[in-house]
Image (cartoon, rainbow, N blue to C red; front, side):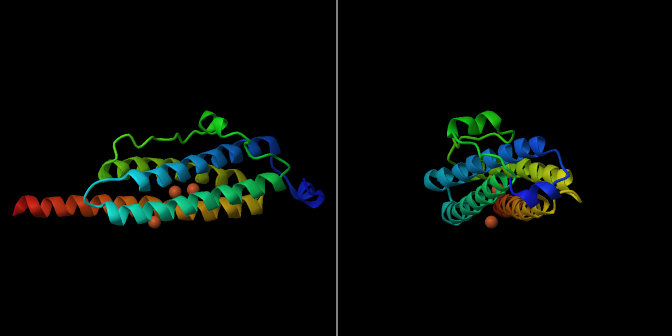
Amino acid sequence: MGKTAEEISNIDNEELLKVLNEAYAEEWLAYYQYWIGAKIIVGPMRTSIESEFEEHAKEELKHAEWLAERIIQLGGTPVLSPADWDKIAECKYMAPENPLDVELLKQNLASERCAIKRYQQICEMCHGKDFETFEISRKILHEELDHEQDWEDFLQDIKSGKEYTDKR
Ligand SMILES: [Fe+2]
Ligand SMILES: [Fe+2]
Ligand SMILES: [Fe+2]
């Protein structure tokens, strides 16, 4: 850990690193969940959802990068083995066993809701104590909120479309 980084740290470093590594593992799982989802998706909304999945996959990977850099700055080591990702993650990987578009949407909506709680937790831990980690978590939180909104909007559109056709 950098000398000044250590001087300005007034937070339980061990606890923070544990939580950051959990989040880091969750980001890789989220990345893969979107990445593989984009490959296997079927259904009437495939094309629009596929590209949104690809975009989200890139964003989750970027979150993993930000977290890895911060973990290293704080003197920690990002989880070294993928075998540990699912073990330490609290937001669990959800295998897209049913490739139907609407099912994948629901799954990823649940994952985003878990991610939002995770970054809310890290923001609360760091608020007023560790400005840099707070800033990173807040940036990620902002994007996870966007992701949740995307899937809520998609599901709402599907529901409205169905109601419309049912009425005809
Ligand atoms: Fe993320
Ligand atoms: Fe996300
Ligand atoms: Fe999006």
